Length: 506
Image (cartoon, rainbow, N blue to C red):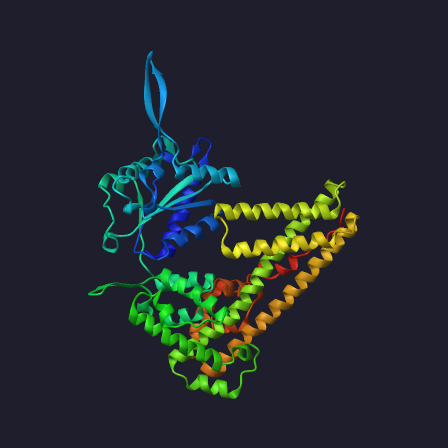
């Protein structure tokens, strides 16, 4: 199965393992089989665990087992004196495993009682650690210490053909694991890439040469390989290099794509992509002011150049749509906080409005720190929570000189209303950009394959799909009449209007 299907399988297993009835867990902890992700290196096994933890709101602790010794996994031995029926003797016991203790530490520090213990490269442990790991996979214990209830074990490993250090499990061990075999899939990875903001040059290159997405081969010069992780890491490096005006060349690309031919091909394509970025005035296209010469060049261009242009346009317009959706998410969170602020003004009249707001900001600050510590917060959610915290700190400063609760709330409400108005203006501007993109493509590409690509990419892009569902785009629906599930439902058309704090202060 692909990595997206594996992710859903893990989330379903977590739902089942965390389910309780009047007698406790419906599946007792000792019957909760550890999940084993088996797949080639660099396809995203670790990345999906971060996504699962963030989406399920649970903790995540990750370890690479190749870095552990028997002592760090099992614990250190010590001697205790015991009495058995009048017979006194010294007995060897073990301190708590570093791995198990880290789970308890997170529970104590964050208050999160459920989570995932993710052990990577589980089938590559040292010879001395191997028996301990087999016992752990069967019983979820290291020595005399077990994984706490409410924490599921997810493990990962590579097939033997990719790693000479792999140790084969016996049937007894396999029969106690929930095995999931994962294969690379570019179309699935592309959804993740849009979410993470992977560089458009990487995405458009791989659209043209999908076979270069994941490749491992043996040559007389050794292993040559390109993985999903390599493309992701290269994308991030390119973005930082561009930000600091550093040169991206074949030498840099080859450090991430360890296949000389693919590295050279992409380096050449990247130079072409930058030329297109310079030649085509994407900002003018989004503003609806593309020149006649630009349109004529796009019409006459070969398909790979058109695809690169679409990548540039999509990257620009979806960036605007993403900003609006993140801004809206912050506004909804801020509205909830302000409603609680209004209640607190009445419940705690001895505290000044600024002190009340300061306490709420501190509460948000602690939640953010706790979620980051637990690994249960995605990068996007982290940005939104930081923006919310900044908004609360701004309101705390705004209310410093106001002691009257009713007047303080009106000040906060006026600030919020201005934020909502700005959000509406930004949404309208982004929708206009999207409409201009469709008009440009209709004029230049008519009903060709490029229009189909545009609609498809907007459909699978998470922020674009949410924006269109929320704010609409008639041009999108004209070209996508069959995808009715993306039409705006009447019960959510007025969601933005519900960002309202007009209720009177008690």
